[in-house]
Image 1 (cartoon, rainbow, N blue to C red):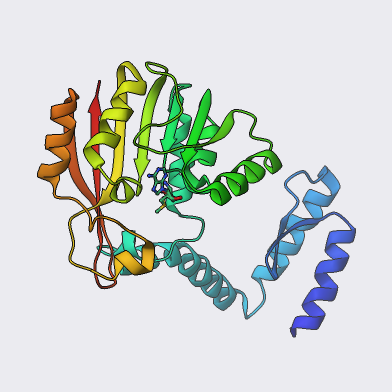
Image 2: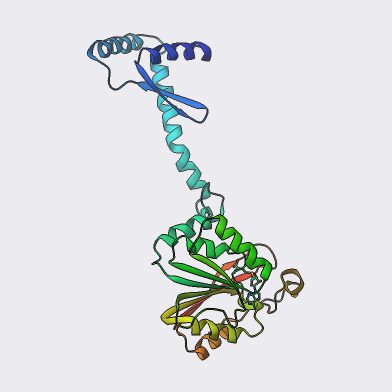
Length: 271
Ligand SMILES: C[S@@+](CC[C@H](N)C(=O)[O-])C[C@H]1O[C@@H](n2cnc3c(N)ncnc32)[C@H](O)[C@@H]1O
C-alpha cells in the first residue's frame, strides 16, 4: 500500500482504539492496543491469522525484523565508530557546565571567596549550592556588572566586593574555600595574594588555584592584560609552602588544542 492509504487505515484503527500511537520527532509509531477487550482481541487474532495467509506475509515479517534490528544496532554502530575519541567528539547535552552542576551537588554548603572573580561565571555556579560566595574584583565596572547580574538571577548569597586580591576585604578565618581562577597571573605579587588567601581561610579551609602553566606567549600581556606569563608548578608550590599551606597538590588539568596550547594548572592545598 502507498503511504497515504496506510495513514488512512491507521487513522481508522486508532479511532476504533485497536492501535495506539506514539510520536517521536517526525515519526509516528503504532502498536496494537495491549488492553483490548475480548471481542476486539478475537477480531485482531482473526485478522492476524488472515494476514498470515497472504503471499507477502513472509517477506513483510523478514523486513520487519531487519528494520527493528537495524534500529537497535544504530546506537551500537555509532559508539563503536567513535570509541577511542568519544571524549573529544560532540555529544548532545554533554558539557563541562553540566558536569560542573553534577559535581556541585556533592559539595557541602561552604563559604567561598572567589578572588579576582570577574563577572562571576564561577561564583554564580557556586552560589547555587554554597552557603555564601564573596566575589572580589578590583575592577569597579566588573563588580557593578557582576552584582547586577547576581541580583537579576536572584542569587542572594552571592556578594560582590570591590578589592584587591592581595588584600581582599574579607574577615580573617571566615571562609572554607578560597578560589583564584585565572586571577593570580594578574597579581603584582602572587606570593602576597596566596598569603592573603591563607589569612581569610578558616583552619582546615582549602585554597584552589586555577592558572596557566608557564608559557612564552608574550602577546598575552596586551591581549588579555596578563602580568605574568603563567607559573611554573615549582613557583606555585614554593609560595603555598612558604605561606604555611599543607597537603599541596598541583597538576596540569587541561591543554588547549589550538596554538599557543595554553595549559591549565590546578593547585590545591589546605590551611
Ligand atoms: C581573567 S579574569 C578571571 C575571572 C574569573 N575568575 C574566571 O575564572 O572567569 C581576571 C579578573 O581578575 C581581576 N583582577 C585583576 N587584577 C586584580 C587584583 N589585583 N585584584 C583583584 N582582582 C583583580 C580582573 O578585573 C578580572 O576580572
